[in-house]
Image (cartoon, rainbow, N blue to C red; front, side, top):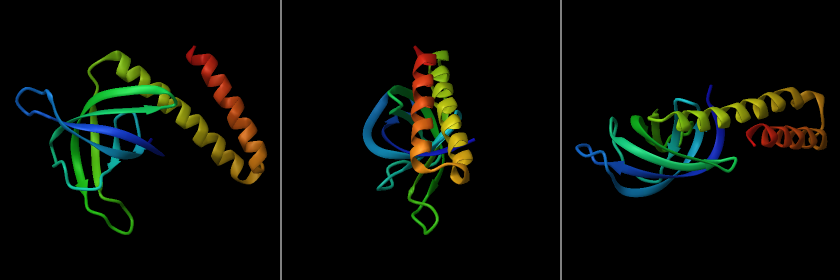
Length: 140
């Protein structure tokens, strides 16, 4: 599943021959899953099938990974200008961090869905705080 969020991300072109990082630019991740993300961009800086590296933080956890642009979109009423990136996870630590982030997002989304009709905002925030405290204990 993909989870909607808003996270700043630093992208870099990867040299197609050496794989080394090239020019960098900023974007905003609007949805995230273990396998990839959608990045909102202000201009057309990348093309389909282009390798990129990404660096971002979610819940204080740093993610640095490589990926490939699998699709590009122009700005429309229903979708902003940006790119879909499929992650190429080389290490177990990258996978572990993305699984931790995904797990926390899943718990937050589940709490939100349950709370929409069953609790007020104060109760939701209290339970969210409890969830975050529990997650911090699990990751320590």
